[in-house]
Image (cartoon, rainbow, N blue to C red; front, side, top):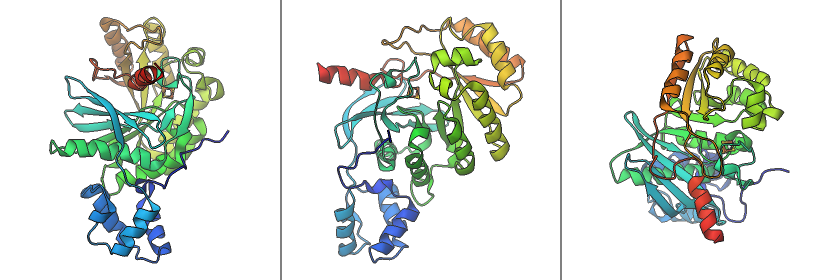
Length: 356
Ligand code: SF4
């Protein structure tokens, strides 16, 4: 079944890359260079209506308004953590709810965006997949998340410096919208978020890793790995039955050879499941010869699932074993632990409350 975006309303103007905007302008009988002016209004001045675009003719502003929408995402609620993490629940035009997170780091502010309403990948540790996939977001709905976060940060005189595509959904299942999104936020006449400051994370859709090696430019790739062997990975992530670990590793090698870029492996530590010293040894064996980095993620407790947290000393032991094998490792700093920060929790909570 093909995955669809919502088509019941005018498209969001944020869906258009600058090249697409030029094409539209020419087809509307106007000048291509106005695309740059429109990008400036949308992403630098960050206006919220076409009328405000005062260097465009009235006729063009009316045409834009007849063709596109540009309303901001509607906030249903947000939670703010003591560490500054803000998690938003937004409502889309067709009523679906999505999550977006602002995280504060010493190197800047990063935004975690959602690419699908729900997810069908079925990772066993993830609340976002419990209701299945509803639909893909279009590029504009993904861009809107960054823009809305930027507007929030404007009040603090801050900017979005990094973007991680790690929210709800599998971005590689929504590949063309993802590509358009990356083009828009990376555009140096707009939000100007450097490609090296953007990371896309996949659960391991192998053919798309090959495609991303061709089309991803300098954007970083992260792989949700979570297991050092194929049996365990299949237990944790059913996607591994379709794209087994050996094929995933081949694709990763190809990506590194093709792009010269380092891959990040995300490894969630699930108490007693995949966090023992032998798992660390096996992981080192699997990826030890690759240009890579491992990000260990002590899992937050997810009420809908029965995974427990790895004790602190075991987390450090796991890290040490990898480091002794020469692997670059970090432990993900816990953010927003006092709010429903695990992916999908706020949305799941909202769904429960709405259903009653
Ligand atoms: S972890 Fe990501 S890919 Fe896996 S089910 Fe959750 S949203 Fe989907």
